Every structure is written in C-alpha cells, then in structure tokens.
Image (cartoon, rainbow, N blue to C red; front, side, top):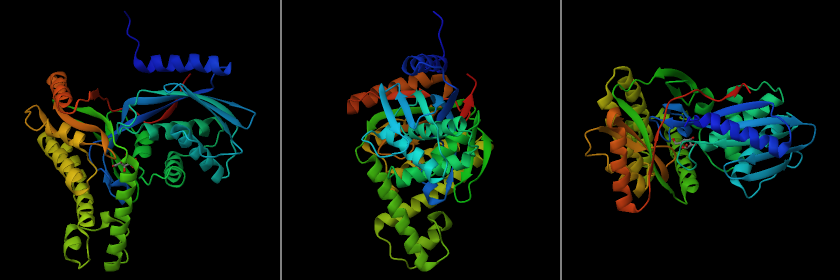
Length: 393
Ligand code: GLA
C-alpha cells in the first residue's frame, strides 16, 4: 500500500471539504507550524532570551475571498463551522473562533478593511500539548487575510497583532515567542532571540547521536491560563519593586541575582523565587547555545534538567504528571536530559534521547507513566522545519 505523507493527505482533505462547503476552489493555501522551545521558558514576557524552533507539525488553511461582509470558517478537525459578521466582531463561546475574531478586530484597529472570505483549516499539531497550535492558528489565519486582501503586512506586524489580540481580546498575557517562531522558523535551525529588542540569529541544531523527542502527558490542568496569567502578574510586580531601587529597570532580565539579594528590596518568598528562575533561565539559554555550538551534548542535557528544576520549584508552573515524566528519565543512561516545555500545568516534556533506541526508551517511559497515573502518554518525533508561508496550490 502506498503511504501518503500526512501533509498531502491533510491538504487533499481540506481541498475536498472546501469544494463541498463553498462550491468553489480556494485561492491560496497557507501553512503555519507549531514550535518547540529548546530552552528559555517564561522568559519571553520578561524581555529575556528564548531558543525555539518551528516544527513539522503544522496547520494548513485554504482561503478564498468574496464580496460580502461575512467570513465563513470551517475547523475540519473539530467538524465545526463559524459564520462571522465582519461588521459586528464579537466574542463567542468558542475559543478557536475567538482567536479568529480577535485577529479580525486587529485588522480593523489598524484601519484595514477586509473582504468577505471562506476558509477551511486542519492541523496535526496536538492541541493543549504546549506546541503552540493557537499561535499556528493566529499566524496562519492572519497570513491568509494579509494575502487575499493584498495588505503587505510584514511578519513582525502579524506577531504584534496576535500578541495584542491575546492580551486585549483573549485575556492571555503571554509573550511573542510562539508567533515569532511560527513565522520566522527555518529548516533545521533554532533561533536565539532576545525578546527585549527582538534581535535574533539562526543556529544549526547538531545533536550528534541524540534526538529531540516530545512526550505528551495528555493532561491539561484547569488553571493553565489562570496560572500563566498569575505568573505574568507576579513578574510585573517584581519589576515594580525593582524600580523602587532603580527606576530605569524595565524587566527582570535587566537585573541579576546579586541585586535581588542585596538591594534591600522586600521580597515575598514567591516573588524572589520567580525572579531567580527568570535570571537563571536567561543564563541557561546562553549556555545552551554555546554548548550546542561546541558539540557538548552532555551539557545540553544537564541544562534541560536544571531548567525543569527551576520550572518545578522556583517558577512553579509544572504539575505532578510533568514531573513524573521527567523523573522517569533520570536513571536512563540513554537520556541526557528532559524538562517540561511551554506554559506548563500539563502538555509536553522535551527530551534528549539516544537516537538509535528512541522507540524502545519512549515505550518504556510511556508504560511506566501509564502504570503510575493511568493515563496514556504520547510521543512525537519532530523535525525542525520552515516557518509559515503561502504555498502553491
Ligand atoms: C506559552 C506562551 C509563550 C511563552 C511560553 C512559556 O507558550 O504562549 O509566550 O511564554 O508559554 O515560555
């Protein structure tokens, strides 16, 4: 039997669905990837350093335009359709529709008028796994609107629109890492970005005989968003306190552990631990990219474990299931390191494993995890890929 690559299958399926639903052919196809983050967690909204990469798990969109004031979108994987009145953009009770409405509002805020449209999309990015399916939705959708309306918006403008919509419409007070990665990713490269000034550089990912494997806890705790927003608020509070000491400080990333310890600022214990995590995590990003350049794979693993320690105990965004998946890797000589990835409170761990026994190791981990918590974890062998773009139809 001929095996059809998953991307081609997805594209064929959305093409068929598009014809069936709208009785016409689409004008453009847009692809937007999810992402992994090697290291640098919860640093983006603290104007710190991140080291993410776009992956081969993607969202595909088909678009066409029309002369009405209505947008029609079909989410194939959910088998759900939304009809959006472009003159009356309001919150709905469906999260995926809200991401789209929030972005449509951003075009409006910019004074850009949009034609009516039809859209069908589908994805193989696992939802709630911390691989940024929502950023792929935002970036791919905005890119499609940009293209069919010939608006010539640049990628940074799309990052800003998504970021603004997340804060003002979705009430998620995140950073720019996910949208940046989905839009700027490059094949086989990770990106070292300083979120303070948005400067970034591409770096080879050479892990020698090791590979990156994602393990999904398959849990998503209820407080995922509230917990994230709470951390973001705590970080703002830290900056406020730092400003009493030095009014020029704009972010935690501009300070250091010495200042935290000796500047005479009154710190509740939780704030001190949050600040320490961000400062140390920024250092780890630099150490990680240095070690990668020097081919010191052992060090990469150590840094992953250190990052997890900080996320678990200092920043407190992990959860028992993530901790268990990381702890199960510790006595395995073929695993160099692991940590929770993304916002936390569920989702995936990122693991550095010996390539020639990846399947055996992941099967063992998954069955031990099942024994302990009764949940079936999943593994993903990802490939680092290109960022979002409009593709030929
Ligand atoms: C989520 C957010 C990102 C970033 C990470 C944590 O993925 O969307 O902006 O803050 O969590 O590093």
